[in-house]
Length: 58
Length: 131
Image 1 (tube, one colour):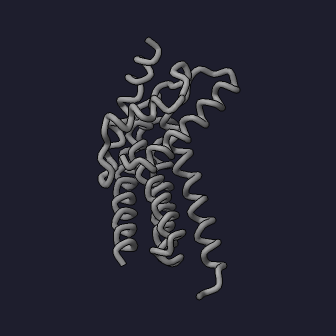
Image 2 (tube, chains in turn red, orange):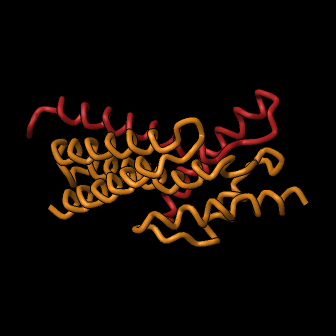
């Protein structure tokens, strides 16, 4: 696994763990974390494309 | 003891991530995740059912494709049009992956379609990056 992706996955798991702790839970379903991360990064990509398309051509 | 259990719980994740063909998984990467400050008491199971286990590698591949494409677009190494081609394949792959676990049971046909869509995503991504 590339270190950049490893950090991304670690961040997602940390965020899910923090949310679970706040909710008083003791478990995190990593499969759900990965699924949510895939959907979230899809939205990031769509936003990045929209921003790039708005940029005037050089 | 809890730390050991947490590390053991991450081992299936490593096995599942091996479906990501451009990114070989190493045990060290998983241990790095476990050592990243996550409370061992909170780290839980990877998947609660076989369906989630079957789709986790696919979601990881899609996530990786998204992040790589965002980075390349920001660096000007691909055009917005090329990124949009990748996004189209990402959407198809996510749709198929989401359909693979209706009611937490595996739909073999949907899962096969999802695998095909991920192959197509990887091909589109590689073609865009090579241009």
